[in-house]
Structures are given as structure tokens and as C-alpha cells.
Image (cartoon, rainbow, N blue to C red; front, side):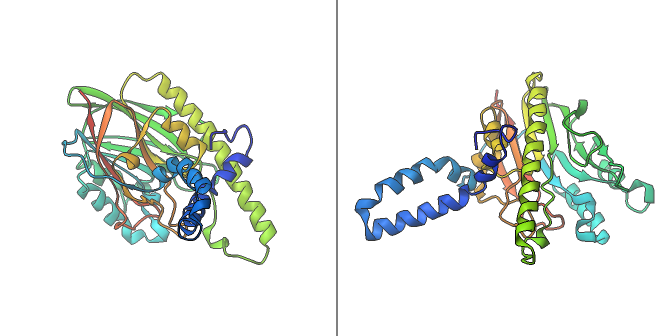
Length: 325
């Protein structure tokens, strides 16, 4: 957990077993308390040591009574064509507009302007005065997938954080917003994707080869995300404004990246979330890989993963923020 993937890949891979170890120890503790209470002390200490992992897994917070200054919605929209269903594209845009969020922070954004049939940017901007869009188009892709901000507050500065790859599907952008006399910075992140084909996970025809391929993808993804986050942290170090990081981190809450961010930032789910906060809409439904982190300048008033909206392979994440005075 605390060892960077850039040092050795085995440690972050092992961190994936943490939730299973915690569940096992909890169940074993209950068994010992019933059958052999005199032997339960050691397992009880192990459960106490696991409290930080329990806290990032499950929360039962209440919304704060204070009004928010900013309602931020982050969402991996999957190019507005989830599972190949183009008919849902306009409905997704309309839902974003009706969300009432002050700022939209979108990953895998695509407007389809070249077709003239689906122009997300034009539709959304009718309701948002300001926008910033950065597209990333690899040579082997025929469409742009990018990162986008749409804001009801003025965007006074924006740019791209140069990470580990050029013209890649994944990336990081930032924008400075003028809100009620203050300037804040929001980073929109779509870190290195896992690139795991979920449908192949149950394929038993060649288990050793499938396992080797899975470990290789996990290792490479963790390594690249650690490098990308290093670039983001260096960029933040030069920033003098209150900061929020939002988007698709593609990392579990037990990862090095997650805990390294917790050293300097707060996690909105941990402060105001309820339940498990799973954000992935797929076979691996138990993943929480979309996050909001924020600096101490903010107070998060409420947080929600909108699991009732299932148009993309991710669920929308929305949070209210209030600047501390």
C-alpha cells in the first residue's frame, strides 16, 4: 500500500487482497468470540489495524447542514455511447443538464460534432456559460475521447497537465474558476485505464495464460498511474488556490495512489458518503474507482454516487463544497 509501484510491482498487486483479508479476519473474529473468546485477542488486534481500510471501504455519514458554494458532478460518460447504444446519447446530455450541477467534470467526453447529428457541446453550453475541452486522439482511434469542464462560473485559466503519454486516451486537465469572489482550481483526471476485458475473466480454457495477462495489465496500469499522479502532485505544488481533484482514477481505495493522496487531501466519500460507494457499472460492480479529493480549504456538505443512473459503464459522482472562511 505504502510502497510505490515504481519501486516494485508486487506490493501494489498484493494490496488488492486487502478487502478479502479484512472480511476474513472479521468473520474469524466473530467465530472466535463465540467459540474460543480467550483466543480472540490477536485477531482483534488485526481488525484494529485494518480500521483505515474499513474506513475507505464503507461509510455511513450524514449530509452537512451548511449550504454549498459549489455543486460538482464528475462522470465518465463513455463517449455518450454506452455499450454501443447511440439512442441514449441525447438522453445522457439532457440528464447532465437537469442535474443542476454548477460544474460538470467529464471524462471520455466526445461531442460527435463532425456528424452534425449529435452535438453535445452545443446542447450543454446552452445551459453552461463556460467550457474547456481537451481531446486526446491516438493514431489508432477514429474518434476523440477527451476531458471536459462545463461551468456556470467563469473559467479564468485552464490547461493540460503533461503526464506520461502524449495523445493518449487518458490524461489530466485543470481549470481555475472564479466563485463568489474566490478562485479555486479543479483537476479533471482520467488516469491510466485497467484495460481488463471483464468477459474473459471467467474463461477457464487457459487459466495460466489469462492470469499472466491479467497480472501484466494490473502491473502496467499501476505503474503508469503512479507516474501520472507524480506529475499531478508536482503541478499542484505550484498552485496557490484551493484544490479539488475529481474524475476516474482507475485505482482502488487500497492503492498507493489513493493513500498517497490522503496525505495531503481529504476524500469526499470518506467525509460524506454512505454505504460502499461503488462507482463502476459492470461485471466488476464492487469497484470504487471514481473519486473526489479536496484540500483543507473546503468543507464537503454532501456526497452521492448516483447508482440509479446506469447509462455509462461508470456511475455519476456528485458533491457539494463550501469554502471555509
